Length: 152
Image 1 (cartoon, rainbow, N blue to C red):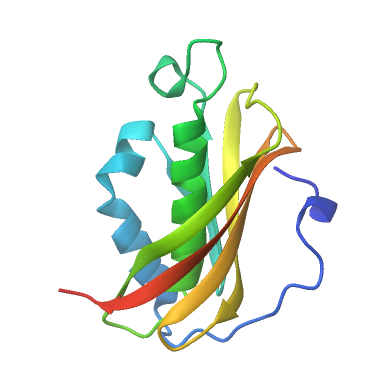
Image 2 (cartoon, one colour; image 1 turned 90 degrees about the vertical axis):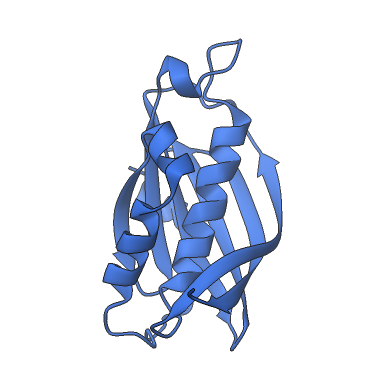
């Protein structure tokens, strides 16, 4: 778990548009086959904030023994996207419009966690960030834009 000072200070607080935001996020996460293939689990789900955790294993490793950057990017994207979804109305889904990720250190540890935080929520576009930690050390950060779409 990252220390409290690893969480960016001054993040806005939000009221969810859907009182069942946690159910919406949990159900959508359950349909994410990629997250299932990584063995990812959903941690905290709060308005504008979602955590995703992946344990190290051969299935998510790269040739030097670290957790693969593609896995780091995928859980960061999903954490920020689900943080965005947590503020959207019932009947919504979310898609990524764009993101940029910075890898700060190798993921050398037993697990990683991505904590997505909404920075600004709009009617159709939301800007969010994800901080990725490995055993208390920040290893990556992502900032992206996420779009609300109607659930089909």
